Image (tube, rainbow, N blue to C red; front, top):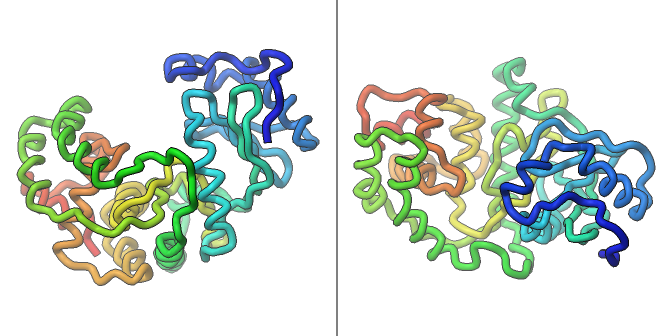
Length: 309
């Protein structure tokens, strides 16, 4: 759904620099949000969620997510993937009520799911609750990977193998630019060359992390934020749960993988280490600060520790 321009309600956001200036400016975004909600027939004042890279608002039992022009390509991906997976996973996902463009900004109006972010609930959960969540998540990822990818025009990356080749070629340089020590960066090319990465492409969320999971009463009640979804190797989706959820906890990570249907072994750990280096949003220096680091400064040792099962 789209409407003709009648006035300039949105601030400029044609590039990342412009968007950074207005991303948290509710005085600038408010007129557009309120007018769009009126057009969609959604009553009630919007309440901005405090986190997230894109503006997202709760209005009663629905959520409005906005995509500025610089992120316009993410809107059809999120809308298309949400429609494809809704009702097909053991972990609930939002249903889509409306999607389109309004004066150059994209939007998706979707269900608001119950629960709180798992990142907030995790510290107070007991061992049994964490086990149950890990198993539920593993089953959910397996169901996600079984859903045929929807048809989305110009869905990036269009060629997964080309994407991987580009990530491999620039990997050491990207991590050096983020502050990775030269001794670690020097090992990257040889380690990546030793790991086979060819695999069939499946539907990926790509950022299955505690911030994108909702929980209530010790059970997952939602998986959200599908705008970075891709089609690629299934192992790619197990990087974020290791880094942002398990964080070296072999019990949690092992239960997640076994619930998915994976039999863990050393080859899998090395592949997961490789995908951690190659992930589009990877930041190895930050991971070395937040995750347990083994005595041996090698990627094989990191793989054994970070992906312990």
